[in-house]
Image (cartoon, rainbow, N blue to C red; front, side, top):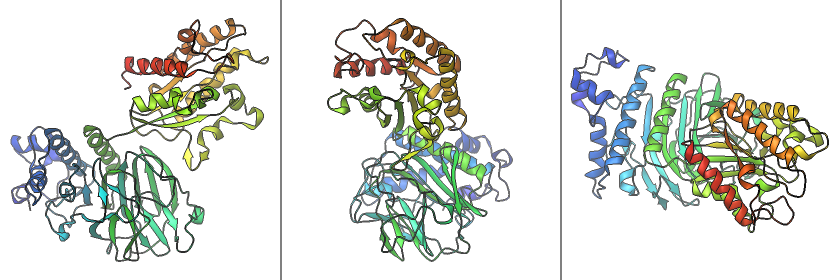
Length: 499
């Protein structure tokens, strides 16, 4: 389909430096201008029977995506070969560029308007306002990519999900039935026939909820499945042996015996399927997808709030007026709120009252990790504890700081969050009691957090001495107080280039 490329794209070479290309060809491969693969893809969309004229930003985004995919050939031979589809490791990639169904049906690797080219055929209702979104009951897309010839140890699914509407585990974006298992872009789950529930413990599988957002890749290689969330191997599961059955891949539903099932109404910003993707290629592929999604302003950051009753929103009316929700809305982020009344950092770091920090941030509530693995540069962890801590009888400042450091280092080391994406917002102010211990605690926390490279929002100094922001119980915030704190945090994120 790309004859001018095939003339000078040596099949035995993998590094662009070795291609022997002249300056012009190197320029479109890694530099400026639209390369031929991008031009062919854009031309298919803009000359469709129902044409869509792409914006300059859309064209640039897909062009950079194509160039990034080509670079992956340097670490895995034949990873992205639109000129040699039989050899290509990546089989289909749907960028979902526009809100027009005809603009989204084309496979980036072979943008022909035919089933053989794996164009996406839409069945029933799908919304393309911000990607691919099934109606959740009957809408899906047929990729015409048949898994015949795929083995269970060489399949790779991947997609970026920027919103979530469900807390239903069996609603997932794509998949196919293999024997007694449904293999999805994110899970292996037991055959659901007649049960409508997930057997999440079979063969050691750990099933996570479909409510999370971000980039998810399930790469089946060697003798185990690798579920990759962001940059981290989150879970591994027993793998079936043998070949996949003759089934085509559906988008927005699972192919169960040749028919769609388990429809997923969550928004999918892009989707790919490959065969035998290497670990090194996966690493570059993740970077390419993040760059593409961000260029289209489709990435959705996640804000994890760990805190006590103020974080929970006690005295806010309604609870959506709490500072965490207000901040998440302003920043177009998904709020995951773990505010629990009466809990203090010193309690659950030391395991008092049955609490343990490791369990606290890794435990699942409805299968949502309270602080998940680091995904992208826009997501943040907020630690909002401390309002009561310096006032308890057994409080020791040095011990508390050690516990805070442990918490921060744990999130950084185990959950892989950069220090610069961990935000401390506290302590808040408690009225009617000695203020000096609170002031000293605030300054010590600020010094420690900033030395670590964390963001510190000095809520205490800003809140102390104000009126109308702390309720009559002398501890919880009024609606005006929550708004005030939200604005403090927003301003700090703005100053530190985190918005």
